[in-house]
Length: 340
Image (tube, rainbow, N blue to C red; front, side):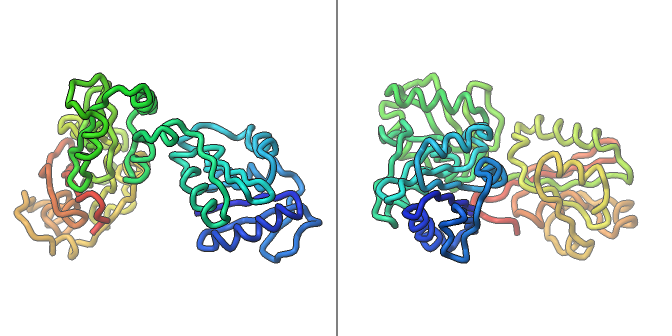
């Protein structure tokens, strides 16, 4: 993690130095007033708000001092809990560690518990689901690297649980078992207004889906294919298959297509890697494929898209589909298993 620590007094500097040792396995930036620097790892700040601005993309910011200083320093940069860093405040005597901002998604609550244990301080947690011992959908999503389909529905689920209403939850994903959570959130197995699904499938808009990155695309296309046509083609096929486009983890193709704009821009729009493979690597992939003699004569392998899927994962769920010189195959990887 990238963590920035600020302190403002001599006592605060002592806590600051202890934090650098406690969090030494992370990338730490430590700041204090120029007159209090006594450790070579520390830096002086002159403009607190500007320095906070520089580090607001970090994973966590810790203030050793008053909460008022922290609030005024971060106020101009706060956006939402899905993008803000974890912000903690520790009093200069090290008695309390307050989770101030991004307790769940940002991990401030977890970090406060950890630092509190190391300092012998009391962690202060104020998020409602935590203090009431309720299931927190955003914490669950972060723990399992899942994308939350709707922030509004996530808030609705939390509100319902705090009001002691039943919520239906289930998982379509092997490797994520929610049977114990089901019993807790819906002990009477009743029909529920709110439903949560851990899935890479498309559900109705009133269902909160928690989406794993487990879908692999294999693509091919003619040279200089229009990028928008490729994007529309992939969207159309995924929609027909009922697959959420946010579940795509990687795009693959043959290495001679590494500079093909249509595929590069597809991966860029999806915010995923574009993996390329040599003809020899693709030819080594075992399986029954819909081979094209023309493609084999042109690039040295008879089926690019299906082989590009199976070199990334071992489960081909849609064989080659073609349109206007573009080809697409789709695979589903195992949850929790990295790219092969």
